[in-house]
Image 1 (cartoon, one colour):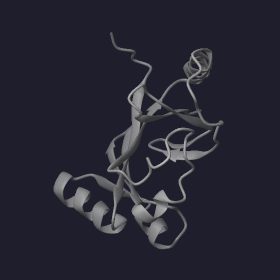
Image 2 (spheres, rainbow, N blue to C red):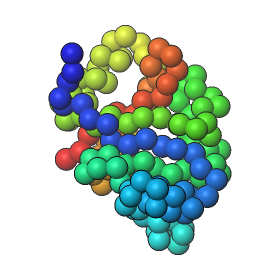
Image 3 (cartoon, rainbow, N blue to C red):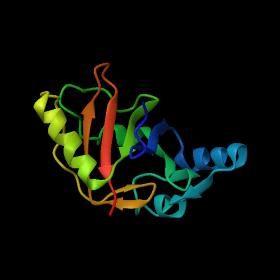
Length: 142
């Protein structure tokens, strides 16, 4: 069964040199770079590359790992090859997911605001772990 209201928003990859990584993904896969100049200028913490109209790959420098707020019980997750996946949902599905997770006592972070993603800034987001320990971010736009 698939749910057409759930979409993959972005994947975060840990890289040594985000500018070089953006160049690689641009050259090798034809993915358009995003926020590279802003990253170089120190205005944003990482650049990204666009996969399609609704999906990007964030290229996070390893130095960012030590500043990532850890999800309860996920100490040490930052800095691995893939940090988390992000699912974008409609606002009502976002609220319903958070309620279901709380009902099943799944640990999650507080609500974050204005987090950058594939479609710009998301008004709200939060993180939780799946049963295998994978970190998932849920967010909504608009």
